[in-house]
Image 1 (tube, rainbow, N blue to C red):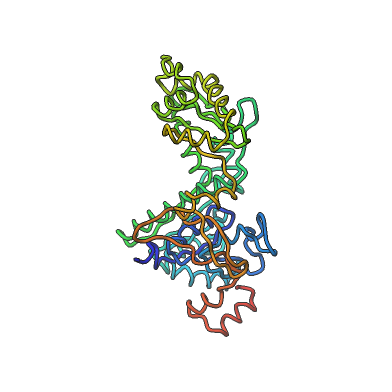
Image 2 (cartoon, helix red, strand yellow):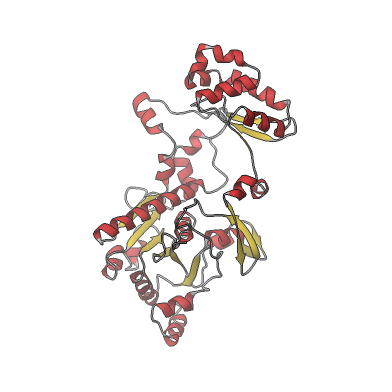
Amino acid sequence: MAEPPLHGIRVIDASTLFAGPTAAMVLGDFGADVIKVEHPSRPDPSRTHGPAKNGIGLGWKVLARNKRTVTVDLSNPKGQEVFLRLAATADVVIENFRPGTLERWNLGYGRLKQGNPGLVLARVTGSGQIGPNSGQPGFGTLAEAMSGFAAATGEPDGPPMLPPFGLADGVAALATTIAVTNALLARHKSGEGQVVDVAIIEPLMALLGPQISTFDQLGVVAERSGNRSTSNAPRNLYQTADGAWLAVSTSSQNIAERVVRLVGRGDLVDQPWFQSAAGRVGHAEELDEAVALWISERNADVVIGEFNRVEAAIGPVYDAGDIINDDQFNAIGAVATVEDEDLGPLRMQGVLFRMSETPGSIRFAGRAHGADTDEVMAELGFTADEVADLRAAEAI
């Protein structure tokens, strides 16, 4: 098996909460040597977010997987010298400080590039590096509100809704990963690095369909539609006789016909309005009623079996326990088991995709605060006495 695609690429993860670190995680999954930089006395707050076991954050174990952890105080002049030496060995630095912070520490791109002309600096902030809101605190929650996502999510007669997890951060992380790999490809051609500017408000907005064009051309703002779709029908969650919830989607015309015939309402297929997605959306109430009634009278395994028989799309609403025990998720390796130094065998989500010749992998889960400082400092050429002096100065 060939080396992973990013083998030999070094990434410095100087970011926190959560888009930047997630991007660094993905790069690490595919072979990059990721070095996580934390403050010596203030560990990354992600370590204490969410559920924990034996005082160890489970989210950290995932977010910091495949990352070596070092401590450096970037506001300390001696720590800045350490960071400059570290950045000189790197291909990518990911940071999410407020715009101007690195410059205030004399660690702006101009100085970083002096020692490393090919360096890619990925700057991940709430609103980007310029503009009237660039200096304000920015989190994924605000991006979910400002991107149009919350306005389009929820029941028609209810309030806007936010997701219960870091959706905007996750989408921004994937955008950052794409941007970084693009910058590395450009460097391969030119030999020069560059700055990547990712605003968390932007990638989620870009994935919400033609909302901007629809407003621009028609003056229309999409209304909340609950679990229904404004593009096709029937599309909803339906409850079975044994209490399970199933998702049904009929994006294509032939699938819509199969579903409606299956539930005993083939007469609707002959209606003129049924011949287009827009027409079906206009009769979503009638279609939902037919599908919901048929499903409510049968157990989940029967419903899924019948949908599969007629080759219509259906899927159960899963929780984590269902995912871990699902044959399809396990067949593609979507759930991985990692032997962790603190928790023993630890299951977590696997790498994002499979590559036939250069696959990614999870080599280890998130490590203790500063666990690899001495190792990395030795790689940078610091002697044991110099490391001791830097610790005494609270620079590392």
